[in-house]
Length: 86
Image (cartoon, rainbow, N blue to C red; front, side):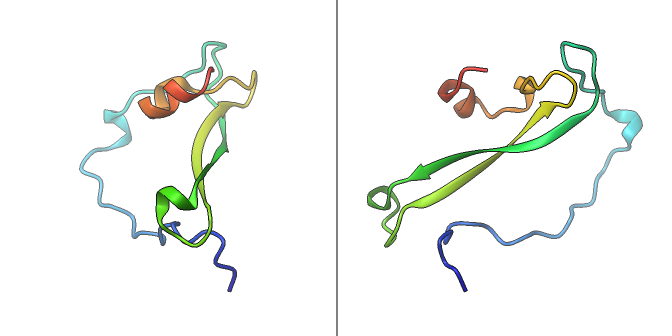
């Protein structure tokens, strides 16, 4: 087994939702598109910070517009917004 990513979390069981799709709002890109693709920002956490034997790769999923490629900023964690310019 390749143990290059020791900090990855195992998959979790889906949660029970207490709302329906009627209770949600649509997310649109500024270009008007409602279709998005998921991609990943990758960062490295130094082994000196993590206390592990090797550096840890941190994967951060982000949504990008399928039509224009713009990152959906409202879905980004605040900490990531401060690190990248979108």
